[in-house]
Amino acid sequence: MGRSGCPLRGLLLLALIGRPGCLAVVQISVPAQVEVLLGSPVTIPCTHSITGSPDARLVEWFITDRDGERRRVAYSEGGRGGVVDQGTEYSGRVKMDPHLSLVLLKVDVSDERAFSCQVTAGAAGSAEGVAQLRVYEPPEPPELTANPGILSVMERSASEIATCSSRNANPAPTISWFKDGARLEAPAERNDDMYVVSRSVKEASGLQSVSSTLYLRPSKADKDAQFQCLVQYPLPQGQVGNNSSEPFRLVLHYFTENVEFLLESPLVIKEGDDVRLRCRGDGQPEPEYIFYRVQASEAVELATKQDGVLTLPSVSRANSGTYRCQVLDFDSPPEVQLEKEVIIHVNYLDPLTLHPGRRVTVPLGGDVTLTCSGQGSQPPKLVWRKGKERVAHSGTHTLHSASYHMAGTYTCEASVPSVPGLQRDQTIQVTVEGKPEMEERLTQHQLLAEGQHIQLTCSAVGHPEPELSWSLPGVKPVVSGTGNRVTSEVMVEVTVALAKSGIWCQARNRFGEATQNFTLKIEPPAATPSSSPPAVGGSEPQGGSGAAVVAVVVCVLLLLLIVGFFYCMQRRGHLHCGAGEKRSLTPKEGGAEDPAVEMKTDKRNEQTGLLSPSGGGGGGDGGHEC
Image (cartoon, rainbow, N blue to C red; front, side, top):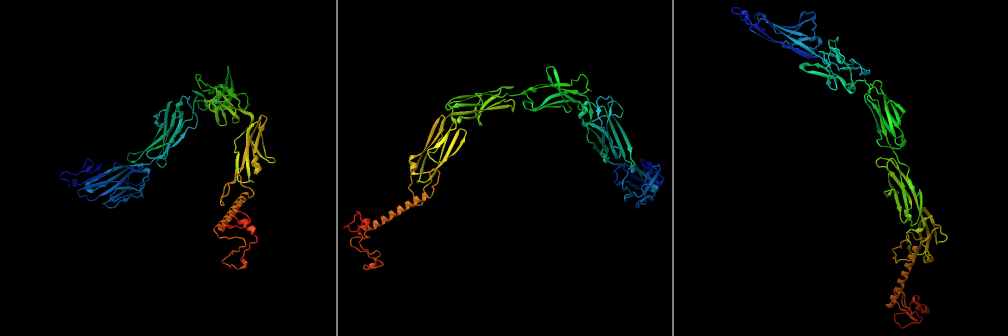
């Protein structure tokens, strides 16, 4: 590794007795390999030591140029700073640091070479070390070009599948192929099953570009497989980088081996449904499909489809039967069965039969039985409803002792529980006829006084529809009807004569009649001045009659109070009256002789008639009585 007059294992050792020049030694250490990424700066160290007393020290850095000549690029003499040689490819690109190591300012691909450090120390001789510079550059993302054509599985040799390229790397990367995540061990030798063809190109920049083309004889099992390539490239310190391409699939052409024909929807069919049948062959490209209706021994062609879907709109029971699908694939071998059949069954319900008919009339109090029956692909479940209420859980419903509230519309519902949505219904209109029946109403009304108005309501049920009449001549009732019910309303003014005679409402049809009587009672309640009598029968007093009654009551009470007051005063002696007697009405304002306040007794008969206890005309001796 070194040069010396006395070599011993790469060291200059001059130790011969009688030769003083062999006492100095030069030792040098240079790394065998230095790694750096492209475009980065790098330092190549040259560590050395000299024993003895050398006269001078010279450190030089050398390369071997493209012509094979050894050329110095930098040096340092006597331990002073480094000098870069001019006229070399490294002029302006390198320098020497204080430790006399060589520094490349920006590494290029062409710098991947050997750099030699030589140390010369006069009589001690010289020593040299060599460092190999390795330059790394990761490649660009891989480029994948897949075969855009259709690959046939019937080919007897391998076909080109795809090409994977990795550009501008150093050192050159490697490319491998994967299928569904597993590495393909593809040889480089050509064969009929699988192989790869690799190419490598050195770019003008000095970087390496590689490509790999995969050749494969595909099979039907590859129709869903995912292929991709993996690029691996070395990095400093023994690391390895990886780049994967996007996965891709093959477009294959293979013959049909299996045919599937099935009912897609609905799984349970009823009349009126849209039925969807799907036929599918496993060939690629998608074959054509021909659909048939098989009747007896004859097959009637229905349609030819590319998507393998046959739709039967709004089916009826006549669409039940066998359907056939035939796949048109002329590449399939004769042993492959390309026809399949499917049988569909359309469920149905016939119209319902009602007894005694769509309309039935039953006499009031009579009995009638409603019967409903139906047939279909399966026996239906029957129920009777009136409105939302279920009245029977079978096809028979009997009305016993028919009343008017039993009249109306009855519906028979038929359904097949195992076939959702398969149902029918039919209605019977039941009419109950007979003489009218009055509905309960408020028939007794109490009023406060004569002259009040009150509204009376009368309603009756019956068939034929009854006519309502009132015992009130001249009134105009308001009549309304719903079904077999008729209602009549009148507004009447109450009089004493009307209260005595009463009022009646009569309902009549051809089967008979019914009457409802209304009782009116005038009875003013005992009331205080601060209270007012309530309205009776839901109506208010008209024309101020209530106020008049209150006024009369108040006047009577006041009159009674005045009479009672004078009576008490007379009994206590505060009032004196007699024949020929004079008294002062205002004793504090005038004397007994004042003629203006004298009361003469010329009208004795009138006074005694008003104040005498006996009511007679003569004066009595009763002292304080008059």
